[in-house]
Length: 198
Length: 198
Image (cartoon, each protein chain N blue to C red):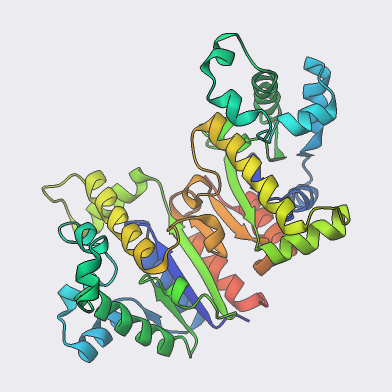
């Protein structure tokens, strides 16, 4: 049986909602911003700072830092400190049945046979409509916001895991929430969790 | 409702078996080598020649040809002729409910809303054991055979579709047959076909 479901997701695909709904159906907790909260408590950075540095490459400083070996030699960056703390929190949470959304949990728990690794994605139209509905309009076009968020998540993922984000073979199941519907995705994952032996 | 299921698959992942079993369960036909047969009838190449040129980049001549604009200017290659004929056969077959395995059908039918696009993959150990069981031992190690076949499929796919093979967002559902089990994959796909509205 699976003990933990980890969900990676494109921005606006409904991956977080699918995580919470699946967990609710299974009667287990779902962790997303709860992880940020725990990391904040343990290492002192604010929730907002962790949100921005615990899953996203930061355009302004990222590429410069990533390729500047000097700044790595001088010690850990704040982003590294958050990565290490986040990793600890995730390894601890995964000792009990739960759903974990984002934060490279698929990579961090890769050696754990009781983990079901999920990727949720959808086409741009579905996601653009969804983020406007959820987060409201902003000065930037929704398509631009999607592209930017995905690019930063993907760069963050690649930097810390050295593998590509969104490649099918890195996940046990990848679902198009726009095509299949969020409800159907929840149903498939809950069914797998309940019935499949790993 | 979906009318057609198209399955792309890593070599040895059981994608073909999943295709036939799903089709059987749904009472619709599954096309794989049947496509080769039809193409052979229409354009005269042998089944073996089409098998080798209708889904695989050919190491010996491929890269040379792909980047040699002179040979493209001189007219269509045999591989191009097979691609065009195969495309025609697939568009014709997709007019009726069926399962189609391989041959870039996901790309050829991308504009068809009634198509469910599937990718099947598994880890190297599962696939290596499977191909030895199915096709027997050969002089080449199974891991080498897997890598070679996947590389040639991927290069063929990229050449004709200009998109990456195996990227999760190109499919509506991607499944790890080694982790989930072939039977479970069949069950999920048959259920989606029967119950989901597109």
